[in-house]
Length: 154
Image (tube, rainbow, N blue to C red; front, side, top):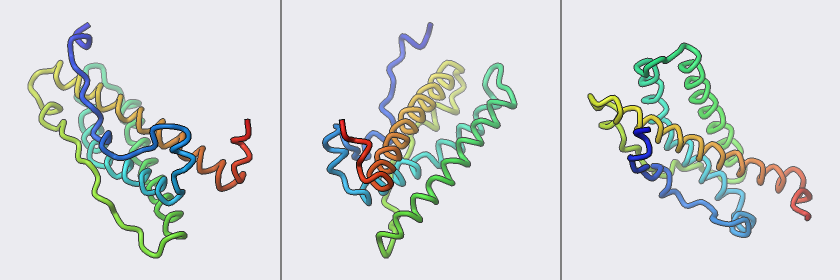
């Protein structure tokens, strides 16, 4: 497969500081987690728009794929707004921190189909990575805030 001979690009959100261990995660303040989660979700706004516009050009693309991409984008917006509301309860002002831009547009628009497909593959791989990361942070915050850390007793 052609994918074996390509080098994966680091995810555009890799520069956003996130806890690297369980201990570091437990030491991270709730407000800092929320800011990180908002920053990651902001960084996906433009790439998700581009993904949605690229899906119909894929070989074998279906309406279901396009609907799914739109669902992801809409849910990301809803989560982002919810996180901002939660953060605003603990801070007077919620600032929009600068977030990393995605630099794959040229490859996504390449005339070479393999380049476009690999770019989409890498984009979806990074989206999966960040989705799992945010899900884990939500679970940690839920445990911390709702169950007063009771779910961490092992």
